[in-house]
Image (cartoon, rainbow, N blue to C red; front, side, top):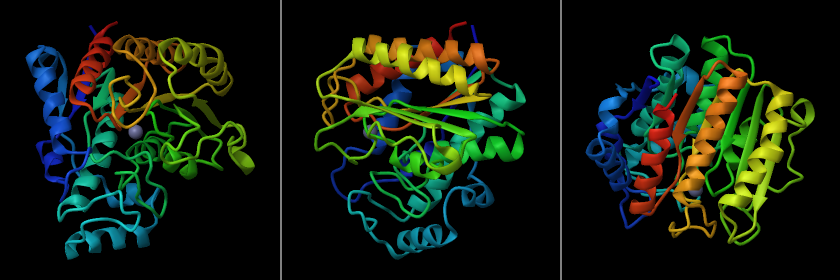
Length: 316
Ligand SMILES: [Zn+2]
């Protein structure tokens, strides 16, 4: 069995919507109850994260945006300008703790105290760009973790695999011109699905041209179509890029039962993708792999998919 780090903090429950909202603390409560009742939690090494260092967050986000975010929370604003992203008084700090969760995961793997890590964090991060929070995201957790790896652990090339059903537009924008971070996103498109970006021709810019790869998937597709993209598109790209560390933006809202989208993955689809990224990490980067929670809004499919995900991450 592998040593799997499980990053979680009870204060993640303090980011509370002021109105009915799918991104709720109950998501994490259900995940932790599931991992406990199945005996999986006991098999992990539990990691308690700290607030991300603001210097590490500034590597991704503009100071002005973070100042505005902090002030908005202190004032008691209920949403960001984008409207779909709620705030409460704790949200700024808990977003720092969420980014700190991804940082704690990559730190533990880099220092060798665990082999892999799953970060059960919220708020999610992959829609947050340099100067904007949106789509339930305030700070970009995987982006902060990738920059942290490069700054603190001398990691050169990072591969981010985003399988949340929504396009990871924030992460893409942060690394659009950066050839050292390869961003792959598989997501539903085209429909009126949020956020509307992530087309095939979005491939990066300038020096970063060729290190952004989007796989838009039609509504209604499922495990088999995803498998083909992983084998025929992602794997050859990773072979060319040769990552030194793999991060997963692990959303579970591509499950057939999730209400926010129309991709039809089953639990077996998540098992396949998890095994696939593990094999890629073993082959390219000494097994170094950290998975960071993004979306997933239907309790039963969220918990059952994460149970499979964690079970596979524990396997040799
Ligand atoms: Zn999503």
